Length: 543
Image (cartoon, helix red, strand yellow):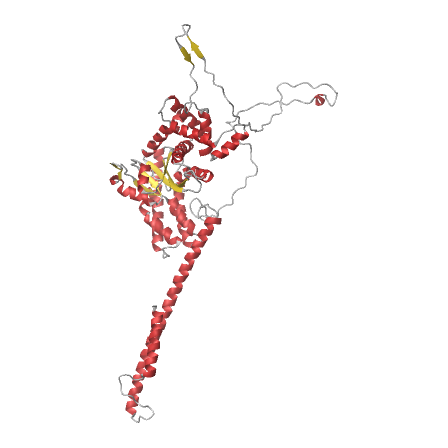
């Protein structure tokens, strides 16, 4: 029962008692007949005292009711604001822009006291250089009626070496051809020896398709995000009749050949001193679109390589499989599995052995910033303050020179972080501790997220090798996410393994600055010529 209800009940009870028992525990006095002045004065004084007490009590209860109403009103207002915030988040998720870019960001790269300048509109552009395209010359002749001079009527002669030149870009349709492989036979005159010329390498004995064909299918699916059914329709328009199951058989055979390269790539990433980790969901359909199981694609990257693992769990045990015996510095978001693994990794048991994981965990400022960007619509003033301070952190990073000796750049980064970034972090911490907000609201959750990860968010100040955010591996996950949207994930456990192999090799080639198809083809030929040989993008670049 609420306090106001108790008060009303008590007041009603007192009214009844006064009405029916006006002077309890005391001899009744008839005021109209009483002639004793002293007795009447005594009665009046007692009644006055009782009325004063009742009045004081009623005033206190009235003030308490007012306080309770204000408290309930404030709580209802906060809850209403929280519900409005949730509604706006839902509307933004369904209909809003997905970018984290703010309409106007102070600090960071903006100069103090200057208004941001409008972007310069570029009018027109010149031809884009195309150094990779083959140049084909095509000559044009005059028609016969135009060969006569309009002045004298004489016959025009070709002016040797003189042309009016221009360039156009056209397309040459891809062709699929059947190559009849004829392996010559040799025999001795004694008929005791017959030799046959060796044929080309194949992914599997008796295969009708070349390794180049399988590489093109893999690049189209895992780099250009074309589902196999769509590829079969494109091939049919070009004259090749093939089923999606046949294309899948080629991918599976190619993945088996490239397995050593994938394993070596994982080892190289796990040996890094600085690595990045993130994960996203992946769908396993088990051959039926109606049956969907949520798996997780884990990504672990260094500056030039990225390795993916698709597992059926998001637990710390799954994270331990991804990290292996990693012993460096790991940049990750606030996902709890990384924190738990950093604390108890060396004592964890993986199968019959103890984990060799022993790493230092650092956390991502982009994830912390994202929480405030999401809450800014409902809390513009406080979120604007902290976002400006975070922008200044990134502004300090942009001051570090991009060229020059790596050791000199590290020293410069360390100096700038100590002199400029450290005071900004103190401002952010002071601001966060000063806020008084609803814990379950967007701003309250953003502040709690940031303060919980504060040691990992500030580790970059004393280590110039640690970046501010985890965007490097998030960018590496964009390709698999687009592929997931286009072909809905994988249809089998084998499909998840094939996907993690090709995504790892192709995305690593992109990070290393190597043309992905060239790398995949080179790695395939090396593995066919020397079974078990692993090839990394650096091996192709050196050649």
